[in-house]
Length: 195
Image 1 (cartoon, rainbow, N blue to C red):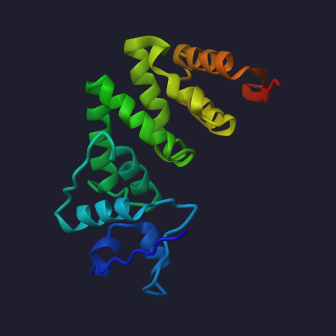
Image 2: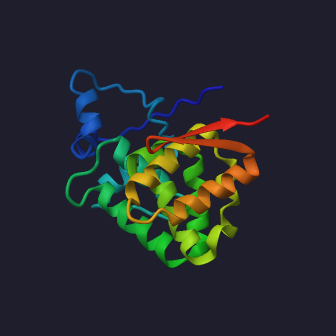
């Protein structure tokens, strides 16, 4: 079942802040946002709200990850654009309240792999949770598909070159719960299911 959403916005306001929309709307005024973007109508409405309300948008722990991811996918990264505003809010939410960090992590899981490949949101939530609670709050990580887990693990490995403690704790927990055998070769982690 498909839903069709129509947004009757003045195109220039939204397009002027989105490099993605500029590229795709130069020849036509109709654009369907579909995979690989995975931007819902609700998320696009929040993006438009930002464009029409002078850079203000309602962000909560439940929607900050989708708005942050959408801002990257839509190329809204200039200056004090939506990407900057959402990143600031993401850091506030994840860094100040562990329950909110867990809420953000859960919302990020639905956005994989984009939430990690665009802004490292999953790995940063994991870091925040592990820094206070150890791995006890990472049960949601065990729900990741192996391919998504590998993307997050590789991202963490690149970002945390000096200290891999969080990465090792997360991988250890995942392997114990998932019964997965890990093969490390040339700094690349391959995960193999053991049945």
